[in-house]
Image 1 (cartoon, rainbow, N blue to C red):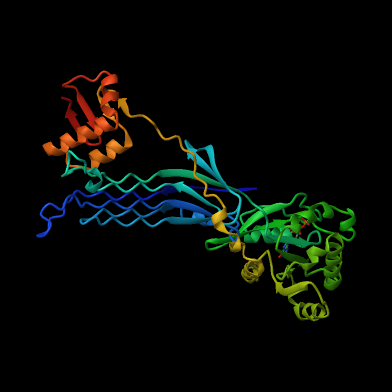
Image 2: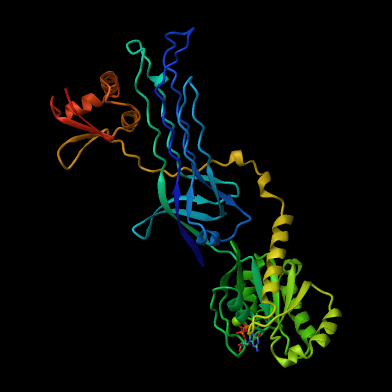
Length: 429
Ligand SMILES: Nc1nc2c(ncn2[C@@H]2O[C@H](COP(=O)(O)OP(=O)(O)OP(=O)(O)O)[C@@H](O)[C@H]2O)c(=O)[nH]1
Ligand SMILES: [Mg+2]
């Protein structure tokens, strides 16, 4: 069973670099002092073993990192935008999502603590202090901050169950899963209705876990009688068992013991898992009238279970309490686990999706005009006031240095032609 969610991630833009000069009484020609903009924050996915579904992404789909702030005078640089960290379950695959389909796998977070930069912040623009040269003591150029990446990605996760529903055939395991999750296993009034394990996501606000409903167990299941033993392996990886019992049957205690014997013989580790008893069919008189008697007989049962709940999958009585108990046991099971945080996260390489960034310097628009798309040149054009004649001269010199002038000439540019860059448009001469 696959859980998936489409999210939009938006990294912060870089802050703009500043054009400023240091002019103080004692420093009449202090030179350029425009600081750099701060880098935009990244959006980073972080694998966290304490999360096991993608449910929270049904509540929140947009993740936006902060912009960097702009540079200031006296060489003061802007602040970096804060990173947006998004926790995802271990095992999450990240796919580029386009035209309503998975386009390309760009990451697989397979280890606790692993990080993936899923949208990279724009770089901070350089202030004019960077553009000083022997010929330009008063640089009028600065860069605008780079635009942060925006992506739509789909997260895919193969679900593994944390809670296993076990019990005799017809006890109401599938009915309980139906009542507490969106899963719709077949329910019927005869044993062995469920033939294959069924997974359901059980939610409580933004938290969730996965429960698995397996076919009913009978005596001898561990030796392969009935359907049982093949399916017991599906609960071996769970952390918590819910043992469902039909309270209207005779000898409730005997039935519970029989199932516990079976799981112990199949795998003694199963017997060590925290177990909740759910005495089902409370709506039936046989149960509600005899509740004290059943409780009394249960008190003689030493056992594997930690808590007992009387519930009804038909009327939903007691199911909220049962659900809460499952969440609590799961939480303490995760708490008891040696914290995977102790792994040195520094040792895990940060994943960066390899996106094919365009290496184009210029492109020809449909109108036939040439547009400069070299990212450095575009940032410079966006960050500078090219209305100033002096700034324009400096800008042209930068285009020479970046070999863009040559590229324009090679593309057939002649004097008098119009060249586009950013929001600017100028006649080449
Ligand atoms: N009155 C009453 N009937 C219930 C309740 N829960 C389940 N049932 C009925 O009990 C029968 C068995 O329910 P299932 O949920 O299919 O039981 P199961 O444990 O999944 O059974 P298998 O898949 O065969 O192992 C069905 O007829 C259900 O309608 C309940 O709380 N009250
Ligand atoms: Mg069933």
